[in-house]
Image (tube, rainbow, N blue to C red; front, side):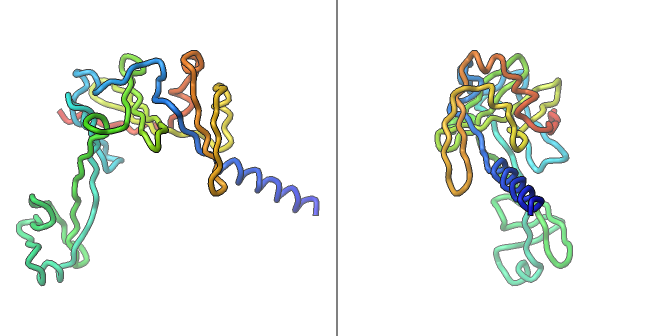
Length: 216
């Protein structure tokens, strides 16, 4: 019975820790002003083999280009006037023809979507952290979740907001606002300028980088 009690206690503790979500009440770094784009020297389109997405940086802001994969059957193409396949391209999916591959009686293709994440009417916020680093703050319901962007020559490393379950790294900040919804604790942090300057954000709250190469 004592062993069962210990197991239950550990399970409850682990489950409780896993149900915590952190975000920030302000865009980061709190001491910096919002900017519309990165320095001109970094302009370009960056792609990564391990990701079905690309980033574009230009004078208008920041864009993310993603690929959505889809397919149609040979039967659909044959019986519908909407689709035409010719010389390895499918027509009728979008305004332009798209390269396609026939496999298992289906034509497979990818559709590229380009969304502006900084600029125009976007609520996301971009701020410069230091010479070659920027924090892209994604807004959701008035709160912010950061992504770290680090330029290294012709490459850019992108690191998503990440932390271990049960982490204590956020204890460096004093001002929290906590709400609970459906067994999930949502904790919003408001860092002061002094707290942020002491905080090693690059190593503590971002995951493994994905390196994107500049397509010059």
